[in-house]
Image (cartoon, rainbow, N blue to C red):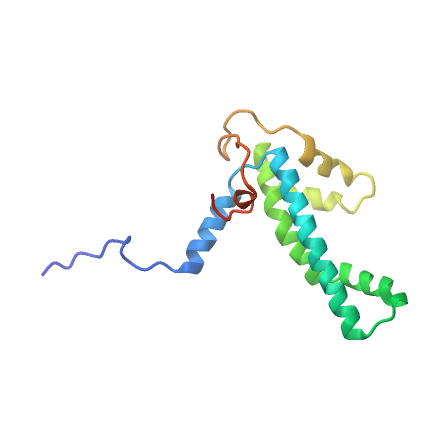
Length: 157
């Protein structure tokens, strides 16, 4: 009898681990200016729809009068869960955009630290949006061609 270990390709893989590896691999790629802009527009539109739906739900649940709209909007926009969802959607875009400029994603720590200083907070945002990426391959890969929205968010080809 042959006691050779089975080939690793025939063993079932943990689906959560494979998604995690795929997502981490996806974060090590680059994202050009146009695709960063389009991804940001999509995230903004999704976030707007989510916030509006949440507003309607909260207003209906509370039986709120129209004069309560400002307090409801403030409570939704300052909700840590809503902010967390927004960050989860935008962080991968910013990390991949920094990779296009041959910078580590850890530069986002500085970007978010500067985001609390008025006027200065515009500089990192404008750099991410307008600074040209490296034209040659860098440690994060080759320059990207224009890709689809599905590819921007790592959902396939």
